[in-house]
Image (tube, rainbow, N blue to C red):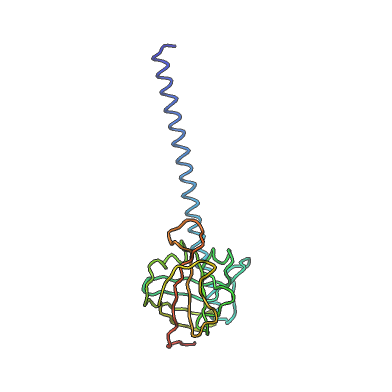
Length: 206
């Protein structure tokens, strides 16, 4: 084989390798896009089922699970009108609960009862809006028993996870929204971002 033939042959091999690599890259990209679409689709369906279960809980006066195998159930709906943010709050703070929504931390009262109710959620999903919340924002909570309570944000702080200063038995009626810090972090750390809101007196019960 001549040198020219070898060069041409080598070029063909390189073009083939580039084509194969591009094909593999395209396939991987399509697979990842498909997985992302599936994740978003599952999240959308889950939120629809949570909304339906919460509505049934309020209507029937009893906890209703959105699907049979879930180890939690809706206990409240939280809304921040200025931000257009809303989420169904689930009982407990297990990993499964937090995968689908904010969790009502065990040992803390229901929102609107005396003491400090604590809702926790992931910073990159259901509590991503905490980065835009500010003092004076209104936070509305509707409980599964139909009771509604309005809160007003009065402060934000960063605290160690094991020294938050939150007192579940504090005088008054309070709501704490908690997530990991920093808000743009990608790994779990020892700090928490805590938003505190106080109840206002125009509470209503249906």
